[in-house]
Amino acid sequence: MIYTVTFNPSLDYIVSVNHFRTGLTNRTDSELILPGGKGINVSVVLGNLGIESTTLGFTAGFTGREIRRAVEAYGVKADFIELPSGLSRINVKLKSIEGTEINGRGPDITGDDIECLMEKLRRLREGDVLVLAGSIPSSVPDTIYQKMMRELSGRNILIVVDAEKELLANVLADRPFLIKPNHHELGELLKTRLTTREEVIPCALELKRRGARNVLVSMAGEGAVLAADDGRIYQAPAPEGKLVNAVGAGDSMVAGFLAGWLEKRDYEHAFYMGLAAGSASAYSDYLAGKKEIKAFYSDCRHPGLGV
Image 1 (cartoon, rainbow, N blue to C red):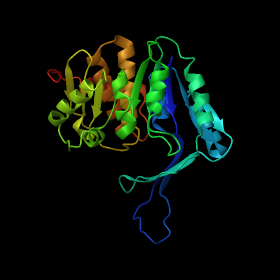
Image 2: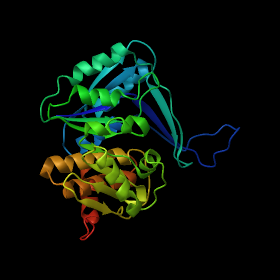
Image 3: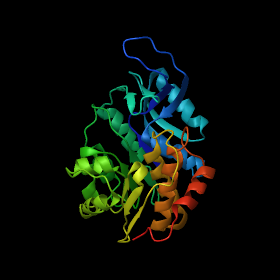
């Protein structure tokens, strides 16, 4: 079974406002409300590919209840811990002004709450997959992913971490199966600026040297780079398409990679499945389905791109 963890899930209120003006009343031209959070996105795309998963995390209040309902409507099993106070956050994403978001804070999570989550994780069995994805609330220490990994050490559980800054740096020595920074996050971690796949390769190898088994770096239109556990480097540009919605593209890449790996235990296949899933979601209104991902997989697999 695959389990995904989202510490701070949300309702994403995605709106488009033509001719947005500050200081005045603006009215939406389109609007959509979806469950948000990186782990949830991974679970939804896995489900679209026919792979079951359970999503874990914390919810609170009426927004939390709506998150659970929406997640289950996608056919994903939701095993959230419902907090006694606070509200799960609402994130406002303005499509008509690229990259403009207002993200809510979310409820406080106590040590007792974290222990409830740890108790759920202790039930994982050999061969399970755990995806630790996204940011954490300020009430949670940035060693939490490291703590969760160490709790499961020695149990042959594949652990994926999609995070940034210290949250990611802290887990490297514990040898996660896969990490998935984007090139900006990778550059920030290593205090450099990365723009090309060639520049990313040595930095991905550095994170492998620090302990990660596989380092998959998403690069938007530049595609992706994988420094794989088989000693090879795989790299490819993104297939051509029109960017519609970048939200969830990196999470889709994680889901695609896992689907490919679990299908064939082959890193090249997993890489291209990841690239295809990420691209398909970026070129869709929401997270991509199986048909779109399979179509982009064919576009992605050009000979000679694996090194």
